[in-house]
Structure formats: structure tokens, C-alpha cells
Image (tube, rainbow, N blue to C red; front, side, top):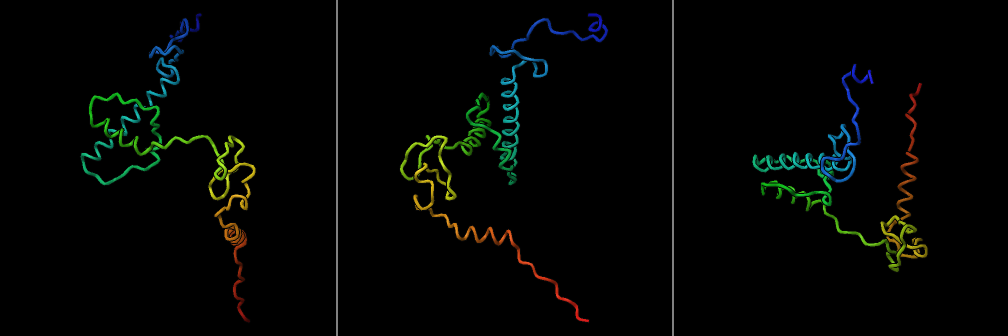
Length: 168
């Protein structure tokens, strides 16, 4: 007890609930928010920064584009558009349209359309196959194994030539 009086720090008397009233416990390191609410708040701040820079680029007419990696941070399913200005919502909407991917269905064999789940085999041609059609001769694979093997051997065994010897 005396050590806390000396340092001036006080331990919290009980657990602190999240300030967003989500029902989870918060901590002082995350500004009295739970980890999920804190992560969402940081994501919203990053999106606001990105929207502000993109609006500035549009207004200033600058031709510089941001790298794709900075745009890939935004996840469209977790974005909530609570903006008063229509410019920010339209800028975020254009970023979201770039990021939306079509929803993939269940994993199915490319040849027989049988559901394979986690036991599917990926071929070098890029398709997914069941255990029956996993071999290249069973699904008429367009991948050229012969030229791929030639290239691999050529890379693994570079041509070595000795320097010309100086004649005495």
C-alpha cells in the first residue's frame, strides 16, 4: 500500500468496461477500449487519412498515385461509412470498389465439379482437382511440364566456361 502512495500510481479498483459499451473489458493502454474497438478505431483513422490524401490529390490535380500496398490495408467488410461530407464517402467508395472480390464458393474439382473441401489438389495449371483427377493426364492439363523442367535444369546448372589461358 505504501509503495503506491510513494509512486503516486493507483491500481484500478476493478475491471474497466470498454468505453464503447460493447460488453468487453478495456485497458488503459488501449484508451479504455477493448482490443477489437481499439483496432477498429485505428483502422478508421487510417481510412480517414487515406481519404484526406486522396481528396487532396484530386483537388490539386496531382498525377502521383499511391502504391497498391497501402490500399490493400483497407478491408471493405469492416468499413463503416459514417461521414458527413459526400466527398469522403465517394472517395472511400471508389477505393472499396477496387478491393471487392467475388465470393468464392465451395472448393470443387475443376473437371467433375465434386466437392473436395480441404483434400483438394492444386495443379500447376492453377486449378483444383479431386483425388481422381489430380494427375495431369486425367484432366488434360495445359501446363507444359517438359519446358518447365528444361528451364529448371538450365537455372540449376549454369554454363561454365574456363577463361582463356595466356600462352607463354
